[in-house]
Image (cartoon, rainbow, N blue to C red; front, side, top):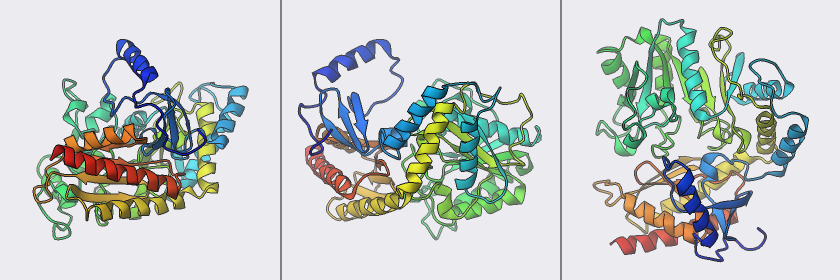
Amino acid sequence: MKGAYPRIVVEPPGPKAKSILERDRRVLMQSFTRWYPLVVKRCYDFLVEDVDGNVYIDLNSGIAVLNVGHAHPTVVEAVIRQVQRFTHYSLTDFAYEEAVKLAEKLVEITPGEGEKRVFFCNSGAEAVEGSLKVARGHFRGSRPYIVAFAGSFHGRTYGALSLTSSKPVQRRWLGPFLPGVFHVPYPYCYRCPFKLEYPDCGIWCVDFIEEWLFRKYVPPEEVAAIVFEPIAGEGGYIVPPPEFFPRLHKLAEEYGILLVDDEVQAGMGRTGKWFAIEHWGVTPDIIAMAKALAGGLPLGAIVGRSDVMDLPPGSHASTFGGNPVSCAAALAVIEVIEKGDLLANAEKRGREARKFFEDLAEEVEVIGDVRGLGLMIGVELVKSRETKEPYPELLKKMLTKAFKRGVLAIGAGISVLRIAPPLSITSDALSTALEILRECLKESIKELS
């Protein structure tokens, strides 16, 4: 992939991609939604090459997974070394040092100074599912209820899906779901569900939980946990106001409710800190993580206070959880982030990207809101700034154009452009990609007007 980038040698999808996609349609259940017909051949750092030889700048990191970039040599070497030793021996029945070393490191980098324990699994959905079991099990059945937020995404397995509520298609035809889950509005200030304005709202979204949920029909002493995303990911890269999490933390403490922080997408440095909740100075009781943890290998983890992580032996386990190869990769990922100063790079590049879109909003009327922390940025496209009507047609057209010109970006929410490149992306590469997005946006506006 040497040379200038992006590089389009044949209009995508090329003939090889079309052939593979046809085979794909015949043998894979098409229960997922793809943004455009990309067929990947190989990747390196922030670049992706397709099967027809086109090279793209990656602004989605394989859905916020490749935070240290694709095929980082340190991660690759760690995986090869571990594969040559052993690939599996079931952590839940036996022990090996790779998992212990990773757990020690996660205890070190997660917020909170007290003693913590770790449970390893295979994915974000599993980490959320396990967190629910930890929370309910900690109270030994006396607190059966869970509070989650409307608009959030926590996974698609049944327990996680019972919390997920970002799009109806994710739940359609699949009920009934886990009982005892109650949804409250997420602090989406650009589209406040209460039709209030920040900061005059007084952070009513927290008071609502106490005054309407707890005082009307959910006894707070029977609530085990409040589960949240520090930044709503699939719901639209929504950043809560500064006061929200400190107020939520205070409410949870008052009633002895555990805070479960879903950092599956926002964690591992994506926002310029190891975990996004650190921006609010709040320490959750339990953190669920996955995606970027092992640099593209399947691995999830639950990290919680030792006194909370107290499920009895035999109550929770995972055959493949804490796979030694994935653990080795995760240790290498943490090393790369630390030695490469990628937290600082995420913050700097994120600042550049936010300023780019804030300046672009002065040129085009379709940008309703620009928000984000580090390299987790959402640009909400609207038909009118007055009505804030979403503009999904524009988003789709723009992303397709960008794909054909060598930039891989995707959306979130109804019509939010999602910017989440590898944290290793250079200023020049980011600038090149953003300029292409500007051109594609302006062309798409003209074609739809």
